[in-house]
Image (tube, rainbow, N blue to C red; front, side, top):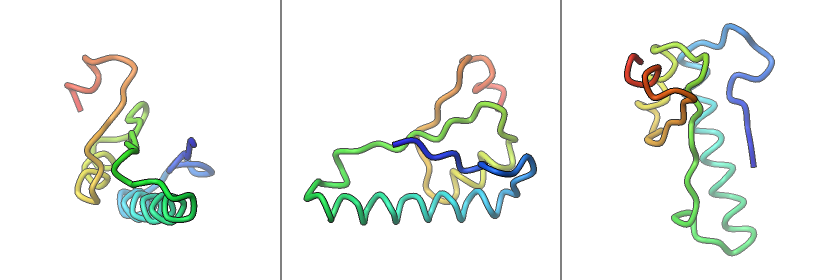
Length: 78
């Protein structure tokens, strides 16, 4: 399953990004219950490519812990 938290907006705010992260996790929790899977079997990876540091910080504060980036040097800079 792939969800773009910034879909439809080039100017997503950190607050919107954090709210989207929380909503995504709630939906994944719901799907796991529906199909009888443990939520702990899944990892949601927040893709940081093209996202601002403020948006990544908001996602982290909302619970994101796994981030994906095309180039490690870009992630280190963020």
